[in-house]
Image (cartoon, rainbow, N blue to C red):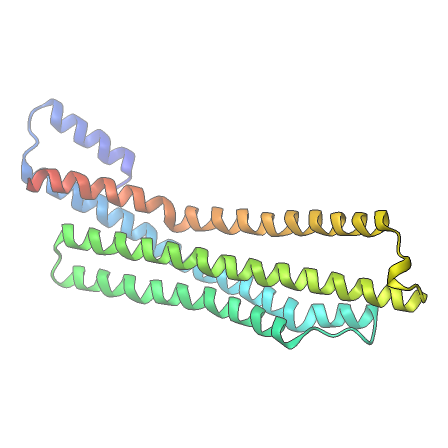
Length: 226
């Protein structure tokens, strides 16, 4: 049952003064199961999207970037600490997702066996909130790794270019150096910002919006119990 249809049914029953506590509980139960079904679907979608993104990030860290760097200069290499940071951030994002899935399905399974609707809603909301914090922590770690890689690559590339041209660093004009730094910062901010906005939008679309909807259902259920 769609949320809109559920609301219309509720309003119709209320206008006819036929809505009792049992009917309200039944409507809330249907709404909750509808939201959980959507979360189930989004978990499957999220797994595929997350797997593809991590695969792309991993290929970029361990395949595309090394090939690109070797094409620019044989002397340039990616620092081991940077590779570790990239791998760690990817693993952290995937681990937080697996943690969320395991905790969510445990709660959902217990509800299928002996369902206390209010307790189930509270536990699922808590799980979604925890996953939201963990997701943003992992996301900032990923963006930090990407930013560090960009800055490190830009710095090493600049030094390598200066050495190849035989120009002492002290003879580089200040305005050229400042311009190169500004261009690099603009590219970094745009690329990192775009990735952050996209992943945040994806998280809210798949999971974040359901926190408020579940909270609304929980508050309505508490009003009945009170």
